[in-house]
Image (cartoon, rainbow, N blue to C red; front, side, top):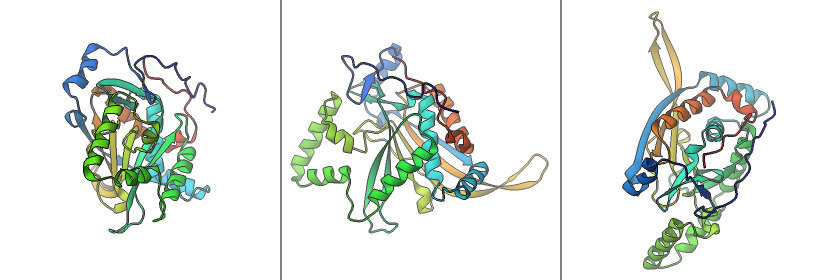
Length: 299
């Protein structure tokens, strides 16, 4: 099925909008005042913990690998599911800046990446942009390209280059520069080059701890930048469960922990969004096609 109205038209920028998002003006006063009551993300952390039963996901991945996609994995499924969820629940793509609530103009993911699985290997981050009507095959291509370009030890991306440039300065000057960047970002006038390079200005920050063989952790949000959600998922686990008839079955799960900024939307909306996310993850066949429609955030 082809997507219809897959990409909403970009709205005309108005006074008070930023280059990376438009201000959400139709919120009731209770939500508008929350960034003044809780001025930082550390003030407004919420924590969500769940396990995803993966039997159907594993079967789907086996079929995909047999069909010619041998590199298809859980990271692709998770990111594709989240992109699709945002396309239907756009309030999770909001952010707080300058004590105002904004709808982000694009869907981006920042991924912490270890160049090699060794203690001495350097770590970097990659930032990837996805269209709201992306399929899982689009996501796999973008993710694999980003990881492939940054896996080599000598490779450096825009994030690495900006960090290296800052750290050429003495410590007191670094503090002053970061303070200036924070001030410019507060008013929405931070240089776009820094915004493009910054992994902290993104829809979702994600870490795949399954590749390290450990369970997921709750990772804090950063006060620097505009990231409203941090997601970690871990290694596959086996668990034996007793059914109603007394029989015992063994099931496989992947744990997921989410830290989010409660100021961007209410708890009911978060709950419905995460239910949708889990549904996509358990049945990734829904992600093989673009969505029929893309929902746009309110004015």
